[in-house]
Structures are given as structure tokens and as C-alpha cells.
Length: 182
Image 1 (cartoon, helix red, strand yellow):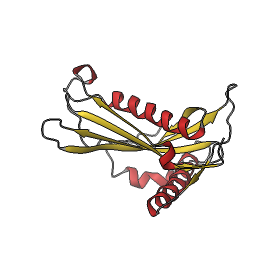
Image 2: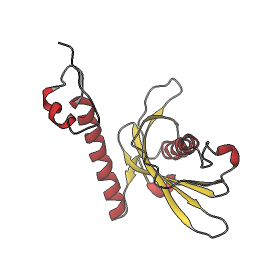
Image 3: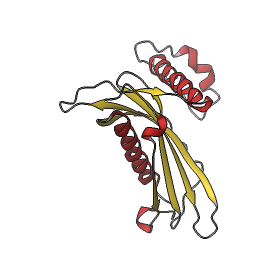
Image 4: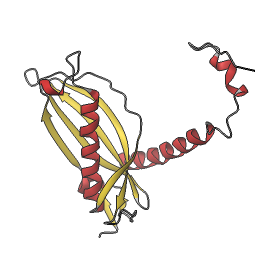
């Protein structure tokens, strides 16, 4: 296994025609279908980088920015943004293209944390990332920040440490009715 690799060496893309069988009740492509494709390409990219089987550890938020229509081509692009000891953050971008007009839309982007595994299912080290430009530095640094934010989110609302009083005032501005039992 190589000690370091560039993001370019592991980059993967796929393009697929969206069919009626991929649509939801409103006639748009089902978000779950797109999420499945995103997970597949994240797996392919991480496995290519690590040269091992990988599993999805987490998915950063996914915002569906634009709907995808039946008959459009959907292109997914995946690239390694960050490497830890056994994990990698894979950036995934989804674009659709109307094949008659050529108009392209950015549909969503997300970040998948993937972990490399050996044959027994134990986490194994992955090659580090060789960064070659400012965009690579930005992506790597942003991945570190995302990781730190996720950690602080999970501890802030831990049941044993949660301070209800600190949130009551802000909840008063929301669509909620609080009826605490005494």
C-alpha cells in the first residue's frame, strides 16, 4: 500500500439516465435513490484510495437543492477530501443534465465518512492525502472543522449533560407547546 496518494488518483464519477422507476409520487426522482447512488460512489472512491473494503461511518447533511426529472442524466462525482488514520471523508457532488437543452443543475453535495476494513472487519490504516492546490487545503481544513462540529453537537445534547433551562427561551419562538409534568 502506498503511504500517500493524491485525490486525483482516487476520483470516481458515474452518469446514469433517470428512469420512471426511479421516481416518487410527484414524478421527480426519489431522494432515497439518489442517496443510494451517493453511498455507492463514496464506497468506490474510498475503496480505490485505501485499496480495501470500506464501510460508511456517517453522512454529513444532504440538502436537495434542485429536483431531478425523469429523463435527465445524473452525474455523481466523488473525491477524497480528508484522510485520518483509518477513515476518509469523501466529497460527493450530484448534478443533473437535461439531455435536450443541455442545461445542468447542481442537485446536492454531501460528505461521507468511510472507514477501511480488513477481512475480519477490523479498521485498518489508509494512505494519507497529498494535497496539490488551495482547493485541496480548503477541503481538508473544512473536513476537520466538520468533524469537530459533529463531535460538539453530539456532546451538547447528551442526555446526561443536557440543560433544559438553557433552551426554553429559544423554544418559545418555535412551533411547539410545552406542557411539562411536575
